[in-house]
Image 1 (cartoon, rainbow, N blue to C red):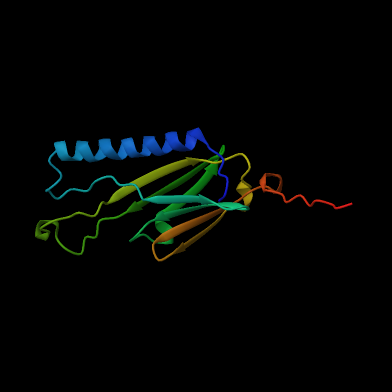
Image 2: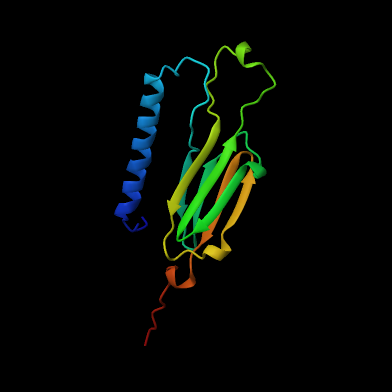
Length: 149
């Protein structure tokens, strides 16, 4: 079993994201947009995990292309921005129901100081954006050998 370092701010950010989604969903229902045809705000789902040498962030971005996504790192903050555009192939009045969300999104994540920001790599495949954030050498766990005398 691996020992995981507890970060209270990670839990707070997760709670904040959940509360934001809850309020967004509640406000959309009170405005009567639940059954109507309207573009709504959305946030892509994100998984973040850590290995010995890197932190990996995976974001679900179905229906987007590489050109629709913008990734920035500034002041230890990673920002994902983009837009899923409504397809105008079918006239809006011909739709019976629209459940997929369209429009722009923005997500921001605070990075640990141990991330090598100049070596972040991004791969976009099958609607999933994977960011690999390498840790600095001094932040990686080190195995200490025991000499026997």
